[in-house]
Length: 354
Image 1: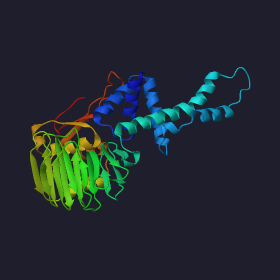
Image 2: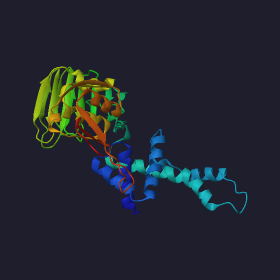
Image 3: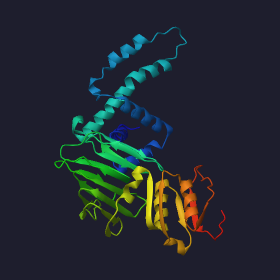
Image 4: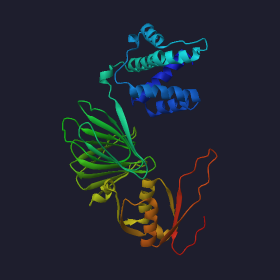
């Protein structure tokens, strides 16, 4: 690896490990890691060292002569059969990896031209499909994370604002602090609050982004370059639907619990079109659901599911509405993986074959 290219890769790794890499930098790094097994192993070594390090390492403070002496003092050579390669591996483990880590941190600090103490360390929490997660942030704000979602947040907030990044759906109970607004950034929205309770939904796979306000007040702005202005100021009990493609918005007022009941393990549907019911279930469990029959598209459904599995929900749908279902056979793809599960919902009097 050429020196310049090596420095570029070290910089990408450092930004990724520190949680500062943007999507383009992540893509470049993942592409490099995937090129060879040695690249992957190199990245994993640095990641392990980074995770285990409890303090910043100054590469210029590493005394290689002293380190080498300590290694040689610990190594005894009982016979001529002693492997020089084994000896070198032990030396490398003590000397070279710390040097690489030191260089990594040095490149990172130089590229940012700021002291390490001023750089926020970001963490990321994920909720796998079909599960939920909860976390208390550094300011005591509580966040519930829904299925298939992730939240990127700093280990400590800056003095002027509190900012997090959401993909998917989350419910926030924000600790009041009027001097430091709390901001939730998604692909389509930027929500600004001080002390309030609200729900945000913005999945990449969904055309509509949603904000539901339970208490307090929030300002909802667009986050794209083409729409960065104020979309709406929500009051308690209001629910906002925002079309990411057309920028058309709609605001309704009513019972907000059905939008946030998922944090309690419930899926609540009140006179909802079956198409929207299935869309929600598909999103939660990461399953493709196809609804057949024009009469079923607007069939109104009323139900509450609590902590049921996807299979249990399908059985309850069949029992409580004029539908049946079949699950398509999943054949392996050329790379050996399997496609997403797909289920077809159809009228009860119709016969379907896999």
